Image (cartoon, rainbow, N blue to C red; front, side, top):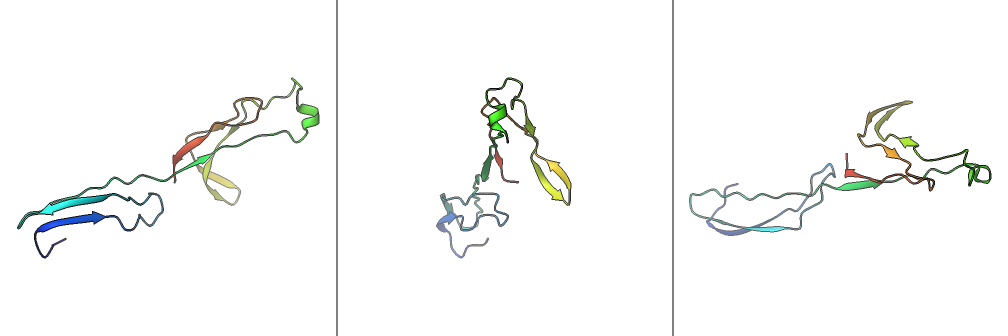
Length: 113
């Protein structure tokens, strides 16, 4: 961008990327531009993240709770990015796995896709 006069300027992000994958930066950068020179300013935007956690529970707790014949541990879920009719595709690389008898899974934290 050509500036009309040399001097000190301040640069601030006023709009985040339109796909919503990054947070808008509140940072303001100071840059001094001399006559006939080119200066550059760079920003590092933080990607937005999301978290997902699941809880698996028995539909018949009166039968399964406290019964050693039934276990929720090891149940595994795959997160898919795309569903087309009954077909799931584009799986997320991290699986959610039930850790113990509480039925709770690990938490997946990653950037928005």
